[in-house]
Amino acid sequence: TAQTPSTMRAANLPTVCRRYLNSDVRITRTGKPILTVSGGRSSLGGYTATVFGATGFLGRYIVNRLARSGCTVIVPFREEMAKRHLKVAGDLGRVIFLEMDLRNTQSIEESVRHSDIVYNLIGRDYPTKNFDLEDVHVAGTERIVEAVAKYDVDRFVHVSSHSASLDSPSEFYRTKARGEQVVREIYPETTIVRPAPMFGFEDRLLNRLAGATNVLTSNWMQEYLYPTHAIDVGMALEKMLHDDTTAAETFELYGPTGYTMAEINELVGNEIIKNRRHVNVPKTLLKPIAAALNKYIWWPTTSADEVEREFIDQTIDPKAKTYKDLGIEPVDLKSVLYEYLKGYRSPSYYDLPPMTAREKREEKKYLHVID
Ligand code: NDP
Image 1 (cartoon, rainbow, N blue to C red):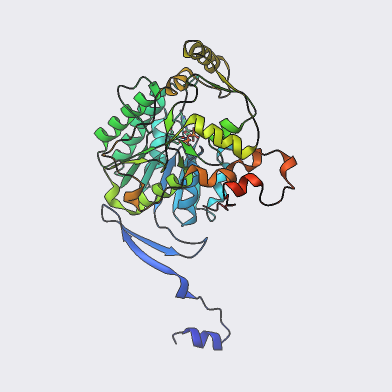
Image 2 (cartoon, rainbow, N blue to C red; image 1 turned 180 degrees about the horizontal axis):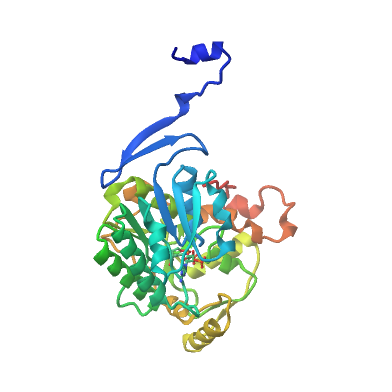
């Protein structure tokens, strides 16, 4: 006889409470049905997603979102140790690692061929011994998008950069713009995402300014930018999976307020209650030094192109879509600074009363960032 919850309870059998499970069938752009069941960590997201560049700063914020909603996430990686933290983002078996090389087409094809969506987050701020910016942003992107087109993957989301322009004086912005051209040519339905400089725990914006070493610049920190929260960008990338109207669109994701780098530096100084040294070196001197450092030192320092980028303000394309079109209210840098910078405060501040005079003046609220 059929077991109902009441007969099962009477017979002391374990019952499954389906009341809280919300199952749904979604249809992808090409008509494939995807069963999703929400149920905490063991949810079934239904989708299979490949995230290239998942081992970087932004990568964890999208892998985490996809894996915890139960999607199967393929993480192509190069370095064993760089990917370990991603394993725990989802339930057992949800995050799958595949070794990949940007010049090995077969490894790229293996990474994308079972997926419903592919994200390309691969990018480099400076040229390295084996890959110049053209190799990473144009040739690498081309190999990935060709594999996406070959295996008829439903959606492709390509992360480019703010200010990407074919006639930019910076090679980084030029190659990012070339990358955008390549993806549009080969797979016109690509969603292009241009994030502003991102802040977060692992960023290269606040951590650089708050660090103990001298901050070397060339433009007196006068570049103007609209920093955005990495968590907001992760949220936007996830929304793109569920919203097929974002296909073939270009998104510029930037924060609500513009700052010069000097203003951000001042905010950072006030927050960590420390005076750091800032040295301005003329561009004609710093560019060759940065180029030499980048060539002979094997850990990331700075590069000639990064010096060039200091002289370029962030540009915003008025035709591109923004957070608003995804229903996201972007977070302002000021409202989360304390959370990201408290670790840089001197330990001698640990026993201060909860509100210092300065905090009272600024009506500072202690925020708890949990994504
Ligand atoms: P990261 O530098 O933190 O991560 C870059 C990722 O790309 C890493 O996973 C890295 O892999 C991978 N990668 C780089 N070169 C290669 C290569 N030759 N072969 C294979 N993989 C490679 O970048 P973010 O997470 O900060 O940024 C993500 C994307 O957003 C990038 O495309 C970046 O250009 C863009 N962007 C970032 C901004 C920011 O403020 N952070 C601002 C604007 C755009 P591995 O770990 O193995 O090195």
